[in-house]
Amino acid sequence: MAKAIAVTESHITPQWRQQPERFWNFLKEVRAELPKVVVPSKKEVQSTTVVVIITVFLFAAYFYVVDAIFGRAMQTLLSWLTH
Image 1 (cartoon, rainbow, N blue to C red):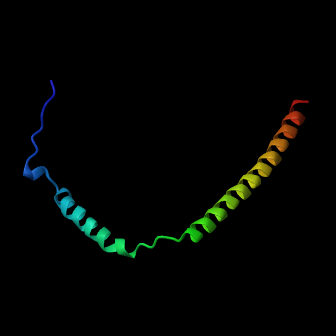
Image 2 (cartoon, one colour):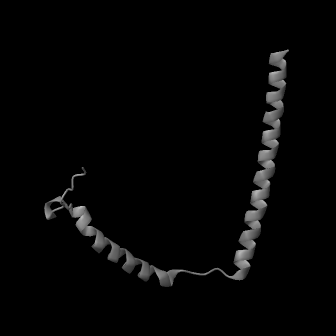
Image 3 (cartoon, rainbow, N blue to C red):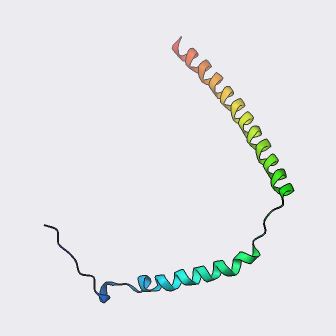
């Protein structure tokens, strides 16, 4: 049989008592910061998107070359060790 534990006021820590107050303070801070948010223009979004796409392709090419070099080195090493 499962035993039930009664939660009394003495078991509630001060940290848990502060949670509702902290939550409302957080919402107030969010509301105060919201007018400061700046939405980028279409031109800014397009230019940063192009930068991200180019960067992704450059990293893909770099990792392809590094993988090819290490793959060739491993093949050479393994063939040398097995003969």
